[in-house]
Image (cartoon, rainbow, N blue to C red):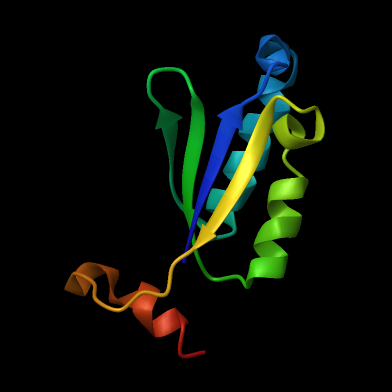
Length: 99
């Protein structure tokens, strides 16, 4: 499982120019079943994503394809979590690691 932080850079004003493409990138991650949770870092610091079902290299490639990353609107940080304990409804996160 991964937590991806997308923190705004000095190029934050360009976000409006790339928002539609960034939102399409998010929608694809959700549709692919990789992005479980997507939200904003408060107050207006950028975004965060909880992702799973891909290895680190695939996550890095996916994040590099984000138009906000490509246009330096955000600086990404990817943290990998080895899941040890979950609520029953989130067990699939732990089970994914056995694959």
